[in-house]
Amino acid sequence: MRNYEFTVIFDANEEMTEKGQEFVTGQFASAGVNVTKQEDMGIRNFAYEIKKQDKGRYVYYEIEADSQSVNRISAELLLQAPVLKFLFVAK
Image 1 (cartoon, helix red, strand yellow):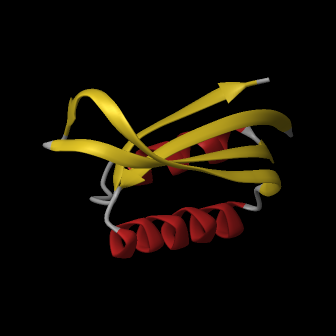
Image 2 (cartoon, rainbow, N blue to C red):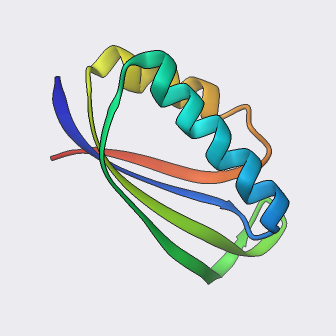
């Protein structure tokens, strides 16, 4: 298990944000990922549009996971409408 920082930007709409967070926590649970920290960084304006949106809700996680789980979760996140952008960084 390695330590990762994971930042995700959800659609600013409250309903879409909730759906996105439920999906992410579900993926973490099914992959056996241990979340050590979660921080909602609030809604921020973008410097440029992302998927025709000009703002989004940033959520930061610190997790413990293996690389196979990270790859599988990344592939699943690409298909989710509430997720505008995401980034995994190994600590």
